[in-house]
Length: 205
Image (tube, rainbow, N blue to C red; front, side, top):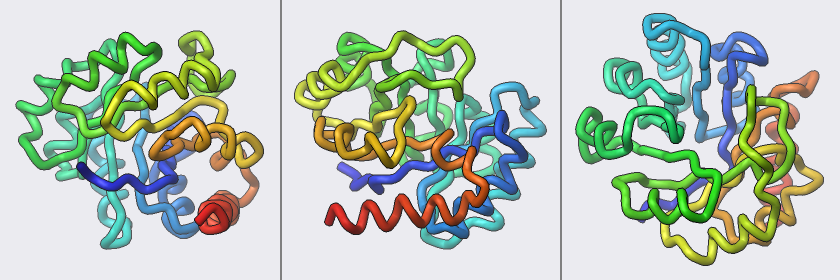
């Protein structure tokens, strides 16, 4: 089973140019980044991912949200799919055995189903209220997150409203990693905020 970085940064196009966002996140020390552009065309997403891979540090991994085609053609490190996207097994057929596949889940039932799919990690959320996604799923809360972490064996990535202020509670539920969007991308200095997260992570041991 792969070892996940505790910090999973998301370069979301709703906050600006994903390339510039990823560049700032890399500068701040991020080594696991998801490229998220819900409204971009396939060609636009492909070009963005291709450029982000070009500027990525050698030890960084770049995951593409939704678009298995862009991930495949750009030779990204994997894809992240939602409940209404391409089925996990179909994404695995497209990408092959090595690339990373993550699946978004919003309940214990969905997480248990993802446990039996060829996914490498299970994203769970939203843990807290979030404004980074249009029409978000109902908030799960910490107790539901703790239950899911106890029931599944695959790495759980918590997402949704996670900040430096509440991260300790989230990690306390047993997650492998936290996905961070607004707390990073709304900062006046994204790279510096990423460094704050890395310092926090180092302090946790």
